[in-house]
Length: 254
Image (tube, rainbow, N blue to C red; front, side):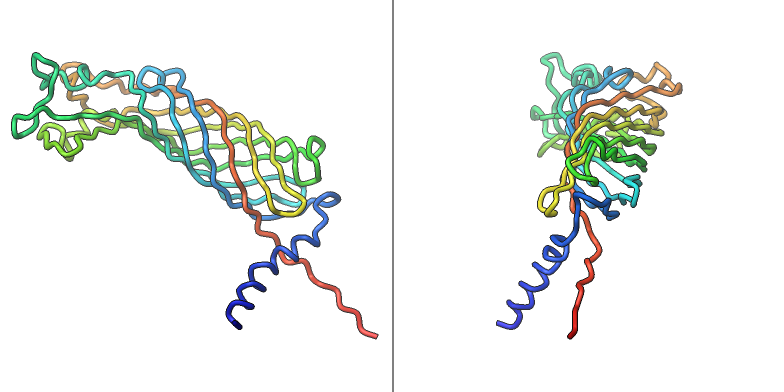
């Protein structure tokens, strides 16, 4: 029974302390932890390889006394739309019927997906005049970081020697480089700490390079060494958990 009471006290004490804050009339500096989801379309050079991406990730930052923001975010990119067909990618070992056989001579199943990730350091500002309280408003961010993407190749339960382990690297089009990002949205910080989120639109510009010395499906064609311009754009929503300092209680003695 004592442990249950202790748990209830520890669980509700932060909520009681936070409820004493005046989010309407004062800017409250706080760390912000969050999870986020985004829908992403490909543009520029990236559009030649991939279509739509989903992205899931997390964010951590700090909102300062004057609503300036500094943080870090990372997202995992994944999708199914590959602009390079399996026939073009693996044409050297596709038979006359359009099939790829495994080591037992059976028809193998080869699937390709788009995969990637990005890591960004971000800085921004919450413009409170557009918000319902002084901690909410138009949310503007700029970021710089790292972007990587490639083709993921899966053979399921088949063993296809030319597509196993390191052999896949000859086909995966691994590409990475510096990434810039911009975000325009709305940050909502609730008065009672129950609901805190942001949503808006973003764009990212990747200045990347191919990292494989040879594309095995094009052995007679030199791999381009120029800097690519990989464009990603779309929407992003995130749920935030602020970590406020406990509000001191006042005690009065007669």
